[in-house]
Length: 467
Image 1 (tube, rainbow, N blue to C red):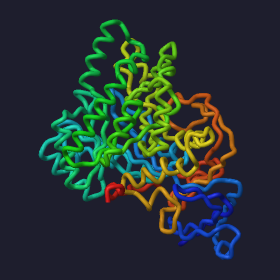
Image 2 (image 1 turned 180 degrees about the vertical axis):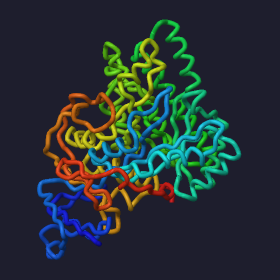
Image 3 (image 1 turned 90 degrees about the vertical axis):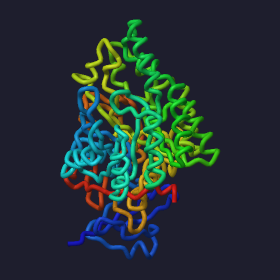
Image 4 (image 1 turned 60 degrees about the vertical axis):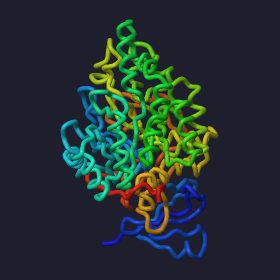
C-alpha cells in the first residue's frame, strides 16, 4: 500500500541549489518538488506531513569509505554492520560504501561473498561495496571484470602494510591496466610502506614506543612520494585514480599538479585530518593511541591546504574511513609498541555535523558541504542521481537538519560501538533531527525508528566523472 509523506517549508539544499520547497515522497522515491507557498506546492497532498520550517532539508549523506567488522592487527573493528549503520543514520548518512577484503591466496569473489554475509539483513541504511585487492594475479584480474559487471566498480590497493595488504608497483600497474579496460576505479592508500617499515624498526630500536611516534615515522614526504608514484602508474596504465584519506600538504600538491595536467585523478580527505592533529597523538598516558590511524594525523599547519583543496576541488570528497577500535582491550594492544596499535578512528556519526560546523567557520559553503558529503561521492562511485541529491526520481533519502541546535560531541551520547569519541567535548552547531531512508523514517525527532534489515544492497555503475 502506497504511503505518501510531505515535507513542507524547509530550505532544500543540494550541491547546485538552495530553495524553500516542499517535497513529496512516495514509494521510496522523491515524487515531486514545488517551491513553498505556490499553487503547485499547495496541490501536493499526503497521508503524513512533516513541518520543516526553519530547518534545512538535505540529501542523506553518502559515506564512501567505511570499514565495518574490518579485521586488522589481530582484532576487528568494533562496529558491526548493524551498529555502524545505525550510528551512520543518527549522523544523517543514509548510504555507506564499505570495503570487502580479498585475503592473500583467495579470490575476490570469496571475499565479496563474506562481506555480503556480514551485511545482509543487518543494515539500517543502504550499502554498497568496494573491493580490496590484496593479491594481484591472472585470476584476480579476470574477477575484476566480473565484479564491475555486477556493480562492484572500485578496487582498493595499498602501497602500505607490507605482508598484509601491500601491492608492489608491478601489481598496481596490472590492476590499473585492467581497470582502464573494464571501467573500474582504482582507489589507492598512498604511503611508502616499505620505507615506513624501516623507520618503524629504527624508532622502536631507539625506544620511541609512544603513539606520537606513529605519526613521526609515517612521514608526509612518504605520503607525497607514494601519491606521485600512484599518479604516474595510473598515467602509464591510462587509468583513473582515486587517492583515499589524503592528509598532507605535499600530497595535495601532487594531486593538484596532476589535475592541472588534465589527468583523471581524484582525492578524498577525512574529518580527522581537518579537525585533529599530531597534538592529539601526543596526548599523555597513552591517550594518543585513540588517534592512531593511517595516513596519520599531521601537524595543524597541514589543515589549511586540505581546506583549500576542498574549496578548489583538488580534493572532491570527505569520507570518514570509519574503522573504530575500542581504547580498552584493542588500542591497548600497542602499549609499549606503537606499531601494534590497531589503525583506525570512529567517525561515521560525526561527519555531517563537523562539515556543517566548517560551513559556519567559513571554510566551505552550504552547497559545497552537500557536494563533498553527498553528491560527489554518489557520482564518484556510480550512485547518482539515485543517491546524493533531492530530485524527482531519486531515492527518498532525506535529512531534516536543524542548523541552530547546539551539541557537544561525546562518547556518552554517540551511537557508535566504541568506548571513546575522537572529538570528545567538541561543541558544534547543527544537528540531525529526522532521517528518511527510501522514504522510511529511521530517525524521527531525535528518536531511532529504524531497524536492522531495512538497508538494501545497492549495485553501482562506474565512476560518473569519466563518461
